[in-house]
Length: 389
Image 1 (tube, rainbow, N blue to C red):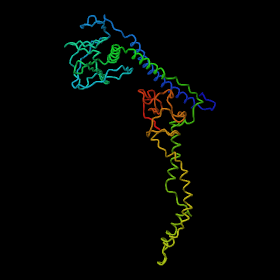
Image 2 (cartoon, rainbow, N blue to C red; image 1 turned 90 degrees about the vertical axis):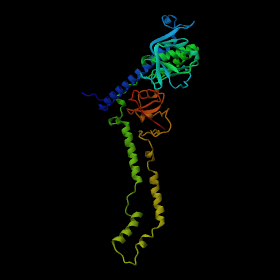
Image 3 (tube, rainbow, N blue to C red; image 1 turned 180 degrees about the horizontal axis):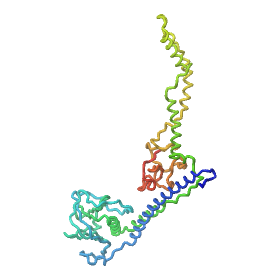
Image 4 (spheres, rainbow, N blue to C red; image 1 turned 180 degrees about the vertical axis):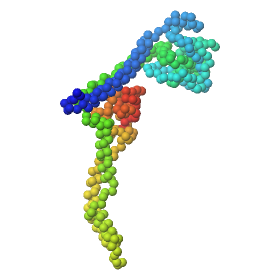
């Protein structure tokens, strides 16, 4: 026997089951993405605090270390590259990117490989021990540093070398190398505390946007509009059409009623055409005397009817659902603080009010406050378009 609620209907139970299942799946996806980023941030924070080199790590390397120089990291599969056309690189920064872009194993245009060998990262310099000799990049003489966002190439400019050079690394070692190079450079200029503070701030900001588990919906919360395909959006479109169609009909030419001014003006002409009159009697004499006061009486009667037409129906929306807040897809200003009752007119995504961006529509039709973020609408099939006001 099918379960029924106090109203004797079973569709409410099906609605509650679908909504709860959808919300739980969206929450699990958002929570998994949040945990991956949290683990990576905490791993980088631990590495920044325990990043120390040793002299023993340089034992056996074909390079002579200076007094007080220690080895942080080594990589045997590095290639030395040079730039054919020298350009000014940006100054080295201590910015940490916890989500580095995905790089492809390719060599950018204008960059040529000139040697290959062992890359060594110390607390004073970056060294490549290649087959043709040794190439050093000392931190104290470094004037430019650039990481290619789409290729595993890092270019470096120093004071004592005119040509820009750098390293081409395996894609799997790019993220680790770039972060450790940032730590080594920060340690050389005594700014490692700034990198650690930056990571602590990123962890605190990420903790504040942790996805909240959605509340369980009950059958009693189901609305009658859920029975229609499209739900509230279908009802809103139907209401808009109910307002637009009468307005369009009102703007069209009204029918001619018997006894009106138009009918009375047309009747003599029709009679004169149907019944031939003698030449001395002109039809124009019968049509011409139309009293002017009658037009002044009919104009006030028609004007209030046009002013009473439902003008909000003609309001632009550019495909946005009907709503009393004027939110549309036509352009204007982004909506960072939507109205409190927005979820009564739109299908809000789970954890809607915990978003930290502007109002957008996702591909599944739900609205979200994740505009401008890298994972906007990640749990709702991705970003579709932005609301404006």
